[in-house]
Length: 532
Image (cartoon, rainbow, N blue to C red):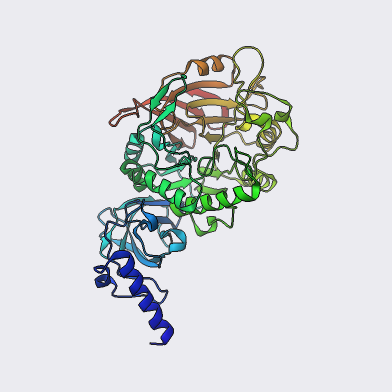
C-alpha cells in the first residue's frame, strides 16, 4: 500500500472515531477505492428521512435516500467523508426476486444524499426497492416504470399534491394518498416553507390562532438551514408513506427558496448578487432531497427543472418552471389590483427558451392528452368583488401577454385536449381557459384543474364567501372548494376525470377524507367540463 493510500485510510479511521465514537471503528472494515466507508456503524438509524422514487421512464426510475442519523444536529450525525450505500430493486414486495442491485456513494458535498438512476427494467410495471448502509436497512418503496414510448395504453391514474406548510396542519392527506397506489404523484411545489418558526399566526379572518407544530428556528437562508427544514418535513411518517407508495414527479414553486421570488428578485429587495447565494444554497438543498436525475443538479443559482414525461400514447406531461425565467410581478405584487403592467408586452413567465421548448413539445405530441403541469393559476379571474378589476399578480393573470401567447399557440396547433394542472391557491378550482376570461369565446381553449393544499391554510371550509362571490363574476370558473386535500386524475382515451379529495380537518390528527367533487372532460371537447 502506498503512503498516500495509507494516509487516506488513517484519515478515514480518525474521522470515524471523531464522528461516530470508538464503537464505529468496529464497523470500519473497508474503505473502497473511491474513499467511501463501506461498513459504517451508526449511533442512530440513518434512514430517518425516508426513501423516494421519481423520474419514471420505460426502463427505470430514480431512487433516493439521504443518510442523516441526527437530522437536526450540526453535521446531521455524519462524518465529512463519503459513505457507501447499497441498493436493490425487486419485482415483488417481499424483495425475494431481485432484478437489479448495486452500490452508490453518499457524499458530504451533497449532504450524504443518494440519487440512483436505475435502468434495464421492464416497461409499465411496478417494482420495489430499498437501501442498506453498514448493517442498517431502509424501508421498502414502490416505484413504477412508464409504458414504452408510443405504446398504446387505455388508462392512467395519478395524484396531484403540494403546498404542505408544516406549521398549519398534519399530513394526514398524505397517508390517504399513499393508499391510492397511484401510477405517479405530481408535486407542483411549496414542498417546504421558508418562514421562521412561530407559535401563533394571523388567520384569514383577521384573528390569531396557534400553529399546529412550529418550524424550527428563524427564516432559512443557509444550506444547513434548508437541510434542517427539509429534515423536519421529511421526518413526518405520513409524507414518507406517500413517497414510498409511488414515484414522484416534482417541480417547485416559490417557498422552496423565498415567498414570491422570480428570476433574481426576492420580496425584500435584496441585491441580486446576494440573493443568488441564497438561491444557490436553496437549489442544492432541493436537489439533495428530491428524487431527481443528475441532469437537474444545480449549477450555481440555476437549475434545469422544466422537462417532459411521456406515458405511452395516452399522455404527455410537460413540467413547467414559472419562477426562474419570469419578469417581476406588476403593480408591486399587490393582491387583487390591476395596473398597466399587467399587459406589459415584454413580460415573461416561462422565458423564451422554455416557451419555445413547450411549443415544440405540444406541436410534436402524438399523445391523446397534453398536460401543462405547473404552479400558478392560468385562469385570469377577476378577484375584485363588485366594480373594478383585480388579479392575483403572482399568477398568469398578472401577465396577459405571455398567457395569451401560450393559449393562442395551443389554439393554433389545434390541440383540443390540453389540461392545465395547478397548485398555489390553497383552494380547489375547476374552470375553462379562454384568451379573455371576462369575455369567453364560444369554445374554451383548454381546461384547468387547481389542486388545494395538503395543509397550508389550516382546516379551511367547504366554500369561502369571497370565492363564491368571485365565481359569480367569472363565467370561466365552474367550481371551487376551500378544504385541504389532493387531486386524483383518472385518464382514459375518451375521458379525463378529476376527483377532488378533501379532508375533514388537518388541525389535529385522524381527519377523514372524501371525494368532494368529481368532474369530467371529454377528449377533444374542452367545453364539456361537467360534474360526474
